[in-house]
Image 1 (cartoon, helix red, strand yellow):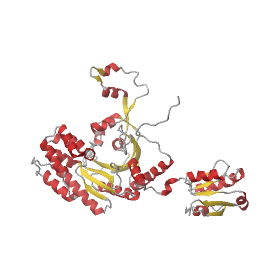
Image 2 (cartoon, rainbow, N blue to C red):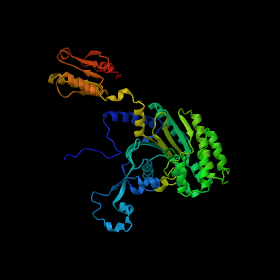
Image 3 (cartoon, helix red, strand yellow):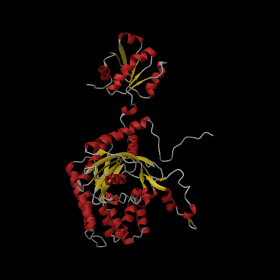
Image 4 (cartoon, rainbow, N blue to C red):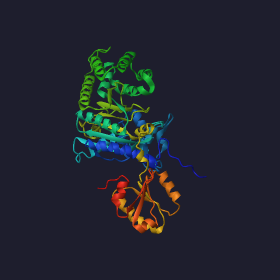
Length: 470
């Protein structure tokens, strides 16, 4: 029986049109990264599990794709060693047969890279990285198991000028792409303050994980989850009061400052929370001074569920299209310390190219000229005509004009249909009459205008097709 071809759920094929659209996104983002002085690196698709595990929290660890040591890695495993009356110890078995995993994000591999190559790089180190990542998540709209991230990070500086620069990069990228966005900002020190003033300083992760689901499950269910995680009714009431704050950024910070300074029901002062509020205030002062164009606001419910964040955290959402966050990141102070390089703070943000593609597609924001990579098609009129136009095609390619030569001599109707399906804007039909005169015919398929050029007038042909080859 012939097997029906398929791909794993949560993954996708990309045809020529999709790749043209994706490259438009990548090229736009890459140009902005470079304009701010960031250099590109790449890291392997696979990392050692010791590099990945424990960096994303319990829920993140569950979403790691583990890679078998070999296709026959179970041959030397005694399954009885991993079985008991309670069932199979899947975690122990996994550790036995899997030493590597597909990267979950680009930030942890970046931290490993920095430590491993610290003698070869200059600090502050500004890098960007555009590569796929993998998560064993449940596929749904806007959520994939394989997707591409476009990360930009600076490591080796604690200055909030770096945070400002990330906001400016976000502003510039989405301005160029034509997407109206809002940047939501919070600070993990403020979230630590939540836990301290509600009397549960050891529950920072539990509170963060619950709050991070606010948009998905609502406040009532977040409160129920916090109770399930051991918080008292009094503590939940404090968190509810914080999450219900409204007003401008200045008003929210002022209200939070009063609570962190001992004004909550518990009367507890959180120095860590106050430090986070100072950082937020400084960052918003820089954003205002820099004249950032897009909307930027404080969102005290923003948690970003990754455990390695320690300072400012960001999330970007499209205003005019219903989808999850399309960009996010934050400050991390201790990530490289795990790999042997302590006291090296970094901050970064990641653009979700796949979701950005969905937004551009949904809003019909892609430029029309992305539909073809070919500018000119030379029709094939026969063996002699083919030899005549081949040097012309080569000369046009040499000055950067994408050119195709139809491979088979045949009916012009078929060749016109080919140009139409590929949205090729120009065609050259050069036959015996043109050859006798030493000419080449070029026709604009959209306007119907056609012109004759001498075979050597490559610049003239280029100009007719909209290229300046001076």
